[in-house]
Image (spheres, each protein chain N blue to C red):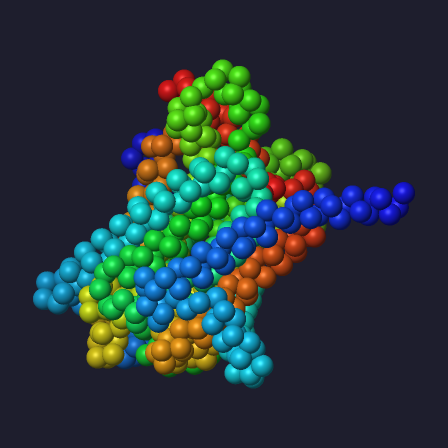
Length: 266
Length: 277
């Protein structure tokens, strides 16, 4: 009985996996055919095999892991500061209408500002350093977090607001037990978006400057006509981004277990 | 609302931005730092840039690139999204690869494209279009999958022709999600535009801020940064206007103090609203 059940589960798992494996095979085959046909020079698109070979060579070097660490460190530092500063500002401006009103114009303009455009300015002030990378990431991420936290705090319904007032619930208790829980879903969405953006911006900074990290390695490899290594680094960046998305979704569903899922199954 | 109330409401919104600007002015004037010029100096550099330097050409180049790329990328994404999203099996089979592609930082491709194809406009447009493609594609699929099954079944039982069904039911149903994807896509597009122009270009706003920075014309660098900020604000405002026009029937942004709607429900209201209209 137990065996047949597990076999059924295995078959179901296979049934779920088979189409994905097919798609993977089609993608790899397409890539290989595209590269082998030689329509586009090998400097742009290396073969899958060449890329895997380059990756296998890279993965044993300390340089490879160091650049991953450097990218993550810059992204995480900027993101952490953006969170520590952005969430309280967002919750405060979301709770008090007067604060929301006076910050609206400011946030509206700053929200759309691409943080990476500050790069030349910060390059002059701070030089091509780790601090500079973290600061650019911070600027790029902080407003998403502020606005999502604000949106979350505003989602407390008037009925709840009035009930809390009627029972004279102390401010701090109200903040901790009402505002925070009801805004966490929105804050988590903001963090998820910001986490993906932080890696994007960190790599962008590395592509443009000599700050160590994945982006710098891609540039270096491509300049050295070693497109296989460049692609290996790009795919590494993709895996990194993918892991961040998966992990933040996992954290979100863990933290919000009490709440029905808002995400549609894909 | 009388005039006095209008002025009061305006002041309640504007006092902080004005105060921030004033504080920045005082601080930069007091610090007298080479790196932080005062607002009037930046304004002067901005006017000079447009009048004497090639800032106007740079702006036109950047706007044209990002405009063409966003149009191409999102149009392709919506078409592919319709195909994938309409099939549950295809959605399921491609999901992890699409998430992976969406998560791959496109900026890393910039060196490859520019070193191989040169510093012209075409490689930049391609990179930006690819960056726009993924978020719009994923959101189109999510939007289509979120359409209530009853809507689909109704369309089937009334034998609504496929093309009409896609145009009048699926597209409006997914539109709120598509616009949410476009909002993300524009942010990505701006980053890619700036990075690609800084990385290798002889024109463009990114090149302007890089060049002026390298020549230590700090005021001009700040002025270019302000222009990029204005471009970002303009693009997102244009998108919001378009969204209001297209999604007038669907109050996507919740009004103050109202709970956000659950996903999925808009699709139903969308279909009925689009029929009425």
